[in-house]
Length: 390
Image (cartoon, rainbow, N blue to C red; front, side, top):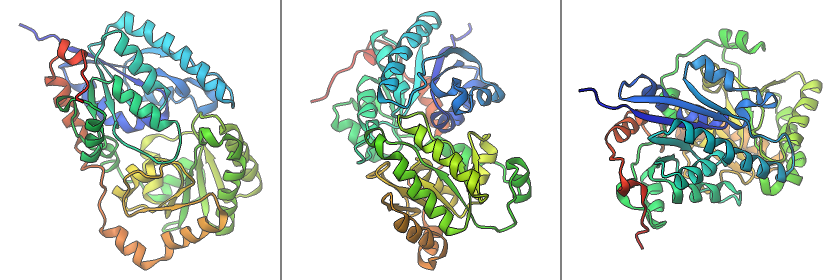
């Protein structure tokens, strides 16, 4: 007698969440107990953000649907309209495919739209990274915690995040601490030489050369300050004299000013190299060989500690999150950034301490823990109908 496969759809809306959960997707897609597909939406489908659905197609995952929702706007209202469009598209797909479980990660719009839609359709939703908190005033916190209240299964990264979910009134039998899935792939990715890296990036990197990587996103409640903020960062990089590889920001309101500044500075200063998206192997090796990661990406918090990479977190984004000894926090200020760069690259005490430190977000075995839960958890009314414990 054949056992019915569990039909699982994962929703991905951006390069960031896709890279975090790819190890889980790989496990599920090769496990005969599951019928696994991706629903692709958001900036993945936009030419302005590198049309990263091509990376998903190259990775060979089956795509259940493409939900085009993104309004190409630099204004806050554009993101709100995009959210409404997304709910409509998700509903149509889930009604047609009828998944047993839907996976979603983090704190962007596809997290809350997916969780709301599934909750109203009585579809179990499994949410990654719930219980995390950043004291930066950004809307991501609200989205993350609201998503947790809709979710039926929680995959937090660390014990502290589980405790935060319990304080929200979530039932303990729904919560499974699994670590950061991105580390599964991050620590095992094949190393490539700086010569090969130079060839792939079409930009010369000498052996043992110190260079920087910049990933800086807009903050929705500081949209009007983004031009000033990114220029402080770029001026510090130019003053440092180091080559710098710059990744485009995500689609949050305010990203136009950041991209415009990148293009303007890159035309003027040959030490800067822009890229929209890189394949995972190239990107990880770019970080692996870098002297420092700058900006406000979660990569500096979550993944960089595993490769002993210093990260300078600029501005409010990511403030208050658990972090390793690799992270230095500064304001959007050229002088502060330059001081932090000197510490990260030249301070012997900082470097020695970094080499001894561990990543607080896991051991690189997350995906197998997730698969075990998705295989064994009982799909019944007790899972769907939630109670608050207080």
